[in-house]
Structure formats: structure tokens, C-alpha cells
Length: 386
Image (cartoon, rainbow, N blue to C red; front, top):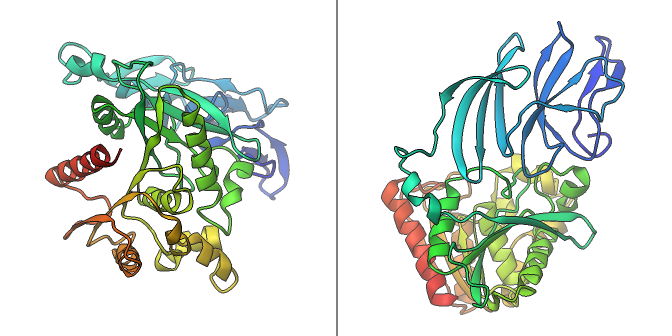
């Protein structure tokens, strides 16, 4: 990342730099294979767009590190596993309208065979519903520092531009994560449910999230919950410019870091969010895993103010909307004490909120009926409050 983006460099065995192999304002994801016989270096990256992951190659002897060759063909997300000899690879592929497919390819990208075609044919269980699945529009808005923020906006299949729609902002917002991609995600199925109930669903990858380079990732260092919230507010300001959005009926929902983000948005930007759902949130970073936390906030002894201002508690008095807080009581990732500490403070301030606890459940709230309960609860909360 010496030039602000993750790239490949060739070194000799003595540690001396031979040459840079890739270059540009985009990131290499992973080195996939090196074929010493033909000199090809294969890697996955985002040279075309941050929204898609493709397979590329360059040459060990390249003199043009920005001139990489794309191997994968279809628009979407390619997860690659190479053979040891570097001549074949498995491609686990999806895009926003195609669930996961797995195929075998040669090193030129030609498909040799399907391992799992997963075609949306007459026998596929999803086929009867394909016409009911809305696809998002993608776009960008500007952050306050001028950087592009990518978003996706889902509209119902029967969208009527003369109506005013409530909007749910789905948020994660944490480091080393990305939510706005041209890839299949089962989480989009809940999005489709909410579209059927008359909502628009909006997602935005704020600064601090992954695959955009250090200038995009670094603003969160030593103070979490600041630029992330500012960027989500920028997203709401964009939504408010749309004639078909009801500006006073915008809610926010997130889980884990997204739960933290939902709280910070409600507490710091309550004029923008009428209601929010916070699942398994970190409320005080002093309560969270030090291996993760100190990577972004440094040590509490040297960044006391950063820890204090990155917690949700200093901003509670700004809350004016509606809140649903839920948490698994056996959560060994984000401890349940994060939520009980918040509950206690809200109660001490006589601030009304809704809550749900899941006895014996961990961070991901696994279990079919538990998930049904969770998502129905969230949908019903937004129906009441938006």
C-alpha cells in the first residue's frame, strides 16, 4: 500500500525490490498463482470497478504495471482457487441476479466444465420468483472530502414514481467490509420482503470500509463513528432530493458494527432518521475485543478521548426517534453487556425504547425460527414507526 493502494511487487531473495507488478487507483485483493514457466502472475482485484472482483494477470517481467489483463469475463464477483501448477482454476461466481455458480477454467479464462451451474431454469426453486426480484440501481455521491461513496438503491418491482416511499437504510459501515457489490447475497432476500411491504432499501459504503485504498480507509483511525455517520447522512441528503422519497420516513437498520452505526446515527443525526433497529451493537469499545479495537483506536491509555467519543453514550441526549434494540444473551463476540449498559442508561434518562433478547443465542442468532422471529420483529417495528 505504499502508493495508497494494495499492489504487487517483485523482490529478489535478498529483499531487494526488482519491480512493481501492478499499479493504479484500485486494489489487488489476493495473489492467486505464479506460473514461473510462462511468467504469469494471477491475482484478484478491483481494476474495473470497486463493485466487482475479477481475475487478472500480469507478467513477472512487466514494464507496464498498470497494464493488467482481465481473465474473468462476466460482470460480477469471482472468487478464485488455482491449481498448484497455475494452469487451471475454479471460479465461484455470482452477481446481483445470479446465485453462486462454480466452474473450472483454463488459465486463459475459457470454461472447461461446470461443477455447479445452478442455472435459473424451470427446475430451479428460485425461478417462479425471479420476476418478483427487484434489482438495484448503483451510483455514487460525494463525501465531504470529495471521495466517491458507492450506494445501491432497491425499488419495488411495481415502483410508482408518483408515490412517496419510506426508506430503510441498511448499514454495516465497519472496516474491512463492503456491502455495495454486484454479487448475490441471501441478505437481499429480506430486502425483497421489505420492498413488497412498500419500502425502498438503500445501502452505502461509507469511508472506513474496504477495497478503496488507504485514503478512503484511514479517516476512521482513532475516532470511530464520526466520518461513517457523516457519510450515511450524506446518503440521506441524497435520498431527500428524490421526489419519490418521504423525507420524514427514513429508518436505519444494522447488526454488529451496523448496530453500532444505527445507534450513532440515531443519537448523532436524529433529524435524519425517524426510527432505527440496532442488533448486537458495540456501545463501548472498551468492552470489545482488544485485538480488533486497538487496530483502529490504538491503546486506551494513549487515546482516551478517542475511546470516549467513539462510544454511543455521550450522544444519547440527541436521540429523538424510535429505537428497537436486540441482542443474543450468549453473544461471545459483542458481549451482551454492551446492550445492558445502554439499556440502563436509557432507562436512567427515562428514554423509551423497545428491546428483545434472545436467550442462549450468540452473535449471529442462528436457527430458522429465531431468524423468522428476528426479521418479522424488525419489519413490524418499521411498519409501526415509518
